[in-house]
Image (cartoon, rainbow, N blue to C red; front, side, top):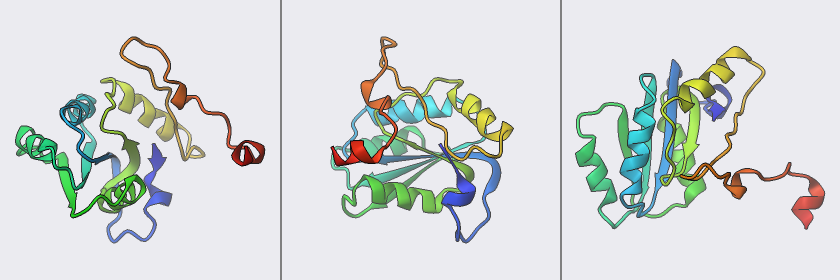
Length: 158
C-alpha cells in the first residue's frame, strides 16, 4: 500500500480523502479474480477496485463484469495488449481516485479486516509512506516470497 499523494503527482483530479484504491492487474486470471475482488469488497466502504485487463482471453473479465455489474466500486480498464505488470499498475494508478493505493495480485484473498487495519497504520503516522504485509497461504503458512531481505547492494549484485 502506498500513499497516493506522492504516487499520483500530476494527476488531473485531486485524490478523494479516505478512499483506498486497489489496483489489480489481470491476464487470464480465471476464477481467482472474482474471488479476489469479492474479498477486497468484504473490507467495507471507502474502497474502489480498478482491474486492469492485460488482454485476457479466458473470459475472466467478462465474468467479473457480469458478477459486479452495477457495483460502482469496481471498474475495468481494458488494455488492447498485454503491457506487462508494471505498466498495468501504472495505468491503474493513473485513473485511481483514492488517496491510498494498494497493488494486489489477482490470486490473492484479502482478510475482511486487513484494509481498514492497514489504513489505520497510514492514517496514524504521516511519516509512513509505504506499508507491506506478510502473506500467508490458506493453511496460515508464511509465503517465503513475502519475506524478502532488505535490498542491499551486495544482494542485488549476487
